[in-house]
Length: 267
Image (cartoon, rainbow, N blue to C red):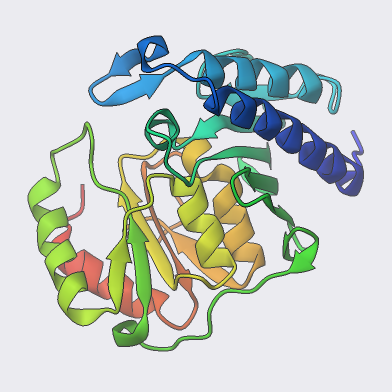
């Protein structure tokens, strides 16, 4: 089956902006009594669920028989070929507390390889996009990862463990190293936005464990298309389903990977 990725990319942008407008409208009148708990420190609301339903209904018409891997389970059909990987509101905790950033993340994979990604952050009206082999863009303008070549001058992003504490001690020790040996570490509360910000050069790198495919699918492709390098903690490419990711510019990835591996034992 032949598909037109440029046309689909335009549709994804439209869908993300529509979902973003809905999310912002609800943010103005959201009540914390509407929060539901999915697991330890893992929250959801009608905003996440409605956003996902909107996105899935529109995407169902893009590629016949495509599967869906969506955080809130709106559609559970998975295909051997094309699959949409969706986070309808990445950064839910930020959203329910009235903090930015939070975003919509939509990725398209073909046989488990990401081929298209879109991330929309409605607070700043920033739409990050990428098509494999076509580069990465922010609101239609080309973006590239930072050219910083040393970790001492690098600003990093990470996510704090919120349910999986099995590697907490290693994480804390690595975090201490980062505090001493880098320009700083930010915890924004949205893995998708961390990746988008690495892609456009605002940060040099991002690392986190305990992630799901919808957290990283679109962002990983955007980083790669912006000239960055994305791996798991062993330096391999099992970051989509491997629950860990390391995304840096090409000049600092190897050095940080070596440092990370000195703290994180193989699991």
